Length: 193
Image (tube, rainbow, N blue to C red; front, side):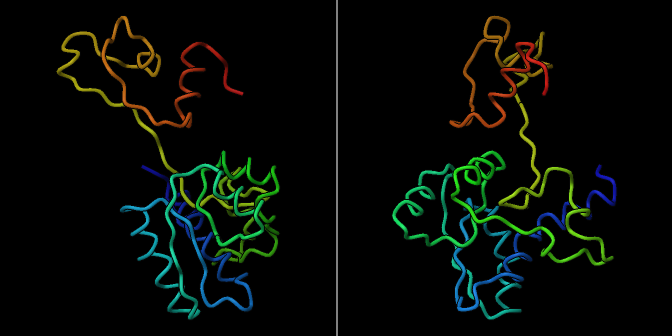
């Protein structure tokens, strides 16, 4: 269970992306285009953030879906036709896109303070404020297995995922290396940096 102050920070982290849009919408904007991941996740954003934002500002939120990565963002920037105002990126993609100059930088001092007056730069979890973004979600990736497939010896560590001799069978993994690459490196003894 999360400590209460951490829960508050997580809620604040989730809200800051939209608070930033509230504080810095283009003066001429009648619509903001926000790119998200679809499904229940996107529906929760619409209910918790987008609808209240529109009710408060009159600015309509148009949601587009994508499957991650930077190809579409690169194409928009290269063609000079950027149509996305906010993009829900993974942290790795945020850092890479910022390094490539695909994103605008954020002045963290201009972000609104917490309700208790704590400046944003002091109120967030370490590492959640980047040059070009603000972490809005903290999530976990888990390993699971069918206990019927391993009635005696059961996988108990991430290394078991890569041990096909002791634990044969198919694996279902993301097509992107998020988490999986880190798991593989750690299971082969590469130290955490």
